[in-house]
Amino acid sequence: MQTSSRGHISQWSDSQLLGVILQQRHSSENSQALAETLLTELGSLHGVLNASQNAFCDIPGVGPQKYKRCQAVVELHKRTGAQHVERMMKLDSVDESKAFFISQLQYYPQERFAVALLNNQHEFLHYKELFSGTINAASVYPREIVKYALDYNAANVILAHNHPSGTPEPSQADIAITQRIRQALDLIDVQVLDHIVVGAGNAVSLAQRGCLS
Image (cartoon, rainbow, N blue to C red; front, top):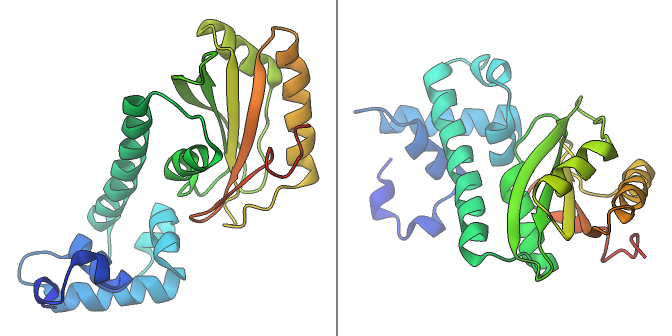
């Protein structure tokens, strides 16, 4: 696999990129074939990076070390997104919010519910993943979000959670829990600016959908 001679890395295929991650010394061709097998068995690059260790290691030719390499890529992506927001110090547009939460949540195989705290100028204060659940549901407790906002003296929050199915279309339950959290935070004068639902590389804003009005 002579990937170095095939143009800029942005032009490489998913299998080429994955092959580099999996590659061991003197095994470029095997790594390319293994990458193609993983993509076929797990459906997509997102499926490979989102796979559990058991599902990943069930495929012949891979093991815990290769799984760790792929998870290191996921963790680097998350940290890059978090550090970018910390440098910019603001989440003051829907596009910025979507990009941030996609970087943090899209690869979880189970549902995670997260909150970003902002001050009056929409400057970033803190981020935390507060709740996790099964593959299709999470137990979300508004009182914990209230406590979290008070701990950091936040004026605004942006909520987010992922749909492990990869489809970010909000459910009625998503809208209902947003309203519950809004009512709880209203009591301490903290505003819910948005609720971002994250899928596989994309996201939906409930504010843009008019669900927070």
